[in-house]
Image (tube, rainbow, N blue to C red; front, side, top):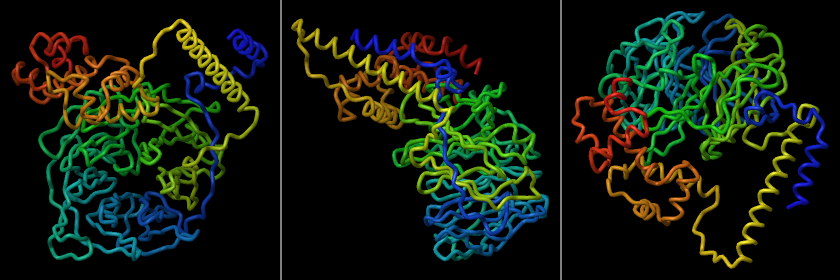
Length: 569
């Protein structure tokens, strides 16, 4: 140990001063890594306001407007290293698209005239196997800049509009396919909304229900509202949106942010949010409940001496179990003709607090801005978009940010500090390991008996914690007032010690505190939805054995009595 300490302090002494002069984001604990950019073949037609999706293993762009801000009734798909142009039934500029479970794609609405004027009723379907489009039926309300989402029951929710009345409608295909129109396929209007918006978020909360929130006003102004709408029931209030507002983007597909397990009733999404000071954070929405995701460091707002403007929704790679929030240099808006950097914030949501890594590129010449899409290989593609910040001069450029493989760290002066930091971390890990080994050796020598340890590794502990949370959220085990750690372990096929240690290490609390947190959260939901419900019914339904336990625990968790909390919320 003395030798290791000597080595550590010698290394610290020998490090030059520049090795510890780290950038802003590293001072917050978020590492920075350089990312490679690859240029793919250009689109055949420059376009912006288009839809981008991946179906049948092919990257596809559809609609939008081309040079002169004129809508184009064309689409393109990438195959064998080339973009192939196909004709659409209608032009769809600033439309919505939904990749359906059938493998087809629904496109609807959009601007009626050049320069983004007006709205349309028209919808059509794209069949990737034949690379063909066909029109079928009309929306109940003409729309542009809307959002859409397919529910588990096959219905499609549509909401949002631009310079026109908003509202919620549903599409139902009773014919069974989108290929044969026989009058059984139609949109039906569901309800009006008091808060109208464009580009709203639509998150599933159940197999046949969804929550609609966020976005901007129908005339493009900022919208800061806590009101959300579900398909069933009246509007609801989201307390988190008092302080944090969803990051807006002009192309959004709800399925891209999903990280849950619909088969087991877990509807979970990641969401980028920002407060009034401009600080970005990560939120999670689980079965309609909003909360901030704990992160190992704050979301970095600066890198390479530049302020970052995050411009995308969070794209979740469920295979890699990471989410990506994409941004670019904020000064782009002052001089869009200059080369600028892309930034990608990687979010490892399998650990708590979530680990963040910020990737950055070299400045990219002829910078084109458009929301990215996740490719089948787990990379990020940016196709077309605004060139020099103008809708009249869209771009045909296609870039690939290779986050699906280990990013290449370019050696240079800007990375010396990172190398030094990694060396220090490695030395500290060696010292810690040696210290623990020394303690165990002393215990063995002193005759301390070591019983069999049923604890699990750090990686397995993370996975076990996910299973515990999922079980608590889907089966509501906390409603059993006699729930014991052995009951939870039995349901998981694990053992008491492993479950207890997992909760302690991952959540930083005891089993009893963990279960009581779920009980209080359930009580809060009931109070919010049914404020007139009897207290005895609320605490019994939430899993508390008696009224005294309920009030003590509620105040310990929230700092308020139920009545005080309800008045404040």
